[in-house]
Structure formats: C-alpha cells, structure tokens
Image (cartoon, rainbow, N blue to C red; front, top):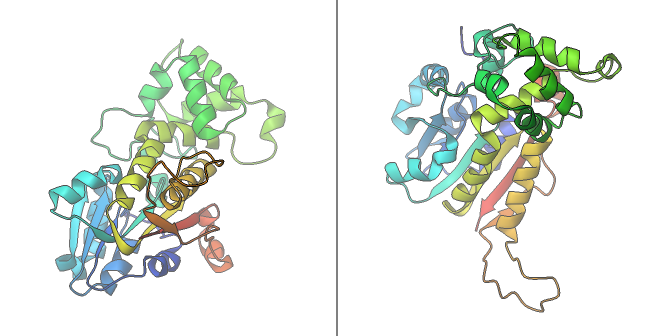
Amino acid sequence: MEFHHISVLLWECINGLDIDPEGIYVDGTMGGGGHSLEIAKKLTTGRLIAIDQDENAHKAARERLKEHLDKVTFVHDNFGNIANILDNLGIDKIDGMLMDIGVSSHQLDEAERGFSYQHDAPLDMRMDSTRDFSAYNVVNEYSAEELNNVIFKYGEERWAKRVAEFIVEERKEKPLETTGDLVSVIKKAIPKGARKDGPHPARRTFQAIRIEVNGELDVLQKAIDDVSARLNEGGRLCIITFHSLEDRIVKEAFRKQENPCVCPPSFPVCVCGKKRTGRVVTRKPILPSAEELEVNSRSRSAKLRILEGI
C-alpha cells in the first residue's frame, strides 16, 4: 500500500522551528517525510536527523527526500531514545526538533496494522512491527484490573471497567484475535444509550490500547527532558499532540523547563538550585486553520506547542 500521510500543521511547524540553514535538526516522527522535506529544503550545510520506528515510513520518506539525501541521516528507532541516537552520531547539541505524536494517517489506513476500529484486521497496533508485544497481548493477557487501568487512564473511557470485564469474559470462550472481535465486545459493554451520541464507541479503548502497546506517553515525557538538555540557545522543540493526555504532558513538561523551582511559595528566594532550561514560546497551543480542517479532518484535534532553548 502506498504510504499516504498528510502533514498536520506543516507551515506552523516550519515557522516555529525558525530554521538555521546551517543548523542540525531532528524530525523525531518522520512518517511519510512531509515535515522532513520542508526542513531539508531550508538547509544548506545543515543536517536533518530523520527518525521513525516504522519501516514503511522509511521507504516512503527516502523516496520523498531523494533530492536531499546528502543532508539527511535516517535512523530506525523511537524518538524516546533521542539521547542515545545523538550520542551515537557524535552530536552534542541540536538547533531544533519536531515530534508529531500518535498514529499516522497511513497507519490508520493500512488495515492489516490493526490501528483502526473501522477495518477488521489482526489485533496488532505496533508502530514498530519488529517488536513482539502487540495489542493481542494486551487484550488477551492483561487481567480485568490491568485492562481497566489502561482503558481508563489512556482512553479516559467512563465505561472502562465494563469494557475490561466484558473482554475478560469473552476471551474465556476463545482469544480475541481481530479488531472486529474487540469492537464487538466494546459495543456489548457500552450501554446503547451511551452509544447514541459522540465518537465511535471503540475510539477511546483503541486509543488506550495503542498507547499501552507502544509506551507512547512514557516515551514522550523522557524525550522532552532529553531534548531540552540538548537544545542550543534559541533552538526550538515543536510538539504536535492529538489528545488531552499528550497535551497535558507537553504543557506541564514545558512549564517545568521554564520554571523548574520546587521551593515552597513561602520562600523569599529560591534555594533548590534548579535552573530554567527553556522558554515557552506558545502560551496557548497553535491550532489548525479553517483551511487545513477543510482539507484534512484528522487534524481537528491537533495542537502545537513550542519550547525555545536558552
């Protein structure tokens, strides 16, 4: 299947990075290479480190960036390992990094990957298909309590306990093997009245299981801390999120970079010794324009926040 991915908030990100043609930049979630291409176009003697854990993304991006390969280093890894990636490349500081968090349009559309509740496919949801742990393991091996915790915490699903209990009961007969099996159970668990309005009843549970399979939120927190420590003065970290859990993590992490002091408010002066490492550029997140929403409905929940190194 051709790798199809529409870059969200493309020009807002490019402008936000404030690219130095001679700088070193990282696209931590390369995908089909849309953001990467526009970064590479602006570089002269600079370098782009393009990271993605999806092998299909690498194939697509290499083709898309074929006229700029002399400026690009491709890395098959997770952006959560950014510190090791930069160390292995002998890079101490960078001038900017972009992270587009979550599942790509292509991953949703590629039915056999199991990310979408709209296609019947094996329970997979691995962003890195070389890993062994998948949605099948979560759905069929987690206890009811563990499932409840995952679905409630990562999906903010009010019916999490019922969904977890129904999954455990259903798999007593036979393992749940496909996304269709899981959707069927979720629809049984969520009362009919609650399914009348709002998004698809499986959306929150699928989101939660995907986050659990790929460890997305843990990776995000670690990456923000590691990147902030590697930004040159004036370097920018741009992060696009798609749901409230991610956005809260980014907002709070950026706040701590700007104001890391942990002293009680009653102290007249700071004695903890923690120094600020960044400045928040976006007091409020940047949202997609009306024009972008018209072209790409999947951008509707996107939010861009930017931190600047000091």
